Image 1 (tube, rainbow, N blue to C red):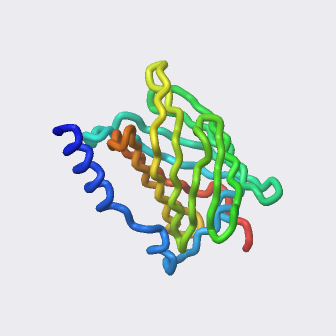
Image 2: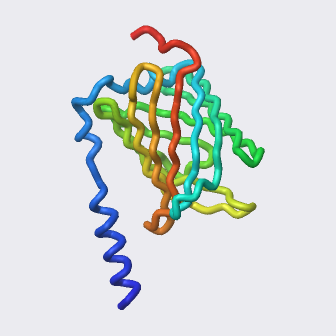
Length: 179
């Protein structure tokens, strides 16, 4: 009975924080994924454990380009412990602000929607920790602040329980392309 009660409490608490992405439909500047992510970008971020402790700091160099209708993001990470990682996203527009994405360490297909200045993005990441792989769910919220700055807040969970949060700040290295 106790595990069932705990599960119900976790589900109720997680439901309290769900704001639909459409809530941001009138926010500006409007986020246009290809416009923002085409070119060279840098991002800096932290991963915080559930306790709030900063477990890792990292930097990402991103090169974005269009390949037909698809947005390709080549991301190169350098972590505070010296480890490096590369991830290449292929983002596919599916209509009405909806996007799907794939990458080598993403399990299945990422699903996202843009509304106003916001992208809400969900996916399962095959995360490696100390040589062991763990599928974790990411609930990403990205907010365009101006033409050259995007703030990303991600909530990482496993089995429905939050294990940490990622805060990431993207800045354009080159001027945004003309619209």
